[in-house]
Length: 310
Ligand SMILES: NC(=O)c1ccc[n+]([C@@H]2O[C@H](COP(=O)([O-])OP(=O)(O)OC[C@H]3O[C@@H](n4cnc5c(N)ncnc54)[C@H](OP(=O)(O)O)[C@@H]3O)[C@@H](O)[C@H]2O)c1
Image (cartoon, rainbow, N blue to C red):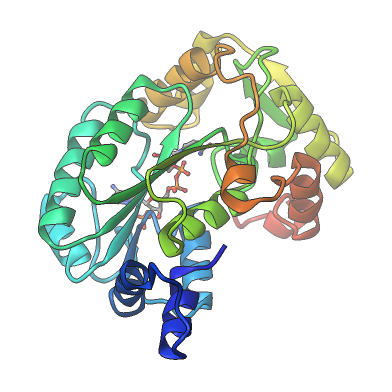
């Protein structure tokens, strides 16, 4: 698929396609105005930043730990982060399901458009009513939009709350036998970058999943095989899970969120694959076993290297 950037280069060489005017305008925006990547240090965000930067495109990271900082909880930070941006990769934190998230996304979208943003790519979640309401906000925005509606990330096991249990050799979850088509954050980033930089993805909803349905016990077994260590999946009740999280000092709002996700989103409603990666990129998504092999080789579950570092 021809990208807006390639079309601009073609136009400079005098051989742009017939609808080059619009594409060149979009390409110009991408070349001169930064993409604001919200959650730009997070699991999908940092991968989007790497890909855009690698193409020489201007990027602004949106997070509390950069300058200017962006904080969903402090609206005074939104304007400086959006200033001059041409497009936004919109990821909400911690989850579109939390109270107030849809209102916050709506306010951010309004401000972004008032400040001249022309393209929004929203990271959404499958099977969440609130996430779908956030999608509707973006779809009604009047600017170019793409929705990336995702299954659970592989990287939750290596870059998030499931990493410590894997390192401890025991993963307690109330997930039961539900099967989930875990997706790789690299695939999500590839879809997001395509949507941010190419013209063929405007107005599309990409439901993206991995190529295989796995139970959480299956996923843990694959990680155990990749690391050569014994790692057990332990089925617990939602109440036992909440108690264990609280004992480990997890704040009450995250305990609520994780229990909501396991009880509601993982009730079987998402136990099927979707073809968003194939539709957006024309290739198959990455398999969980490849992820587990590469993450193990990179040392993310290397207990010895982490002694004293946690
Ligand atoms: N994880 C999954 O399996 C999954 C699946 C489907 C959809 N999603 C969706 O993906 C989104 C991101 O979730 P994630 O778990 O993958 O997290 P993540 O993107 O890895 O989140 C971390 C990022 O959020 C930033 N952040 C944290 N608190 C913030 C705040 N108050 N204001 C602004 N930025 C903040 C962090 O930077 P700083 O700490 O520097 O601020 C970091 O860049 C959520 O909306 C979730 O619903 C996740």
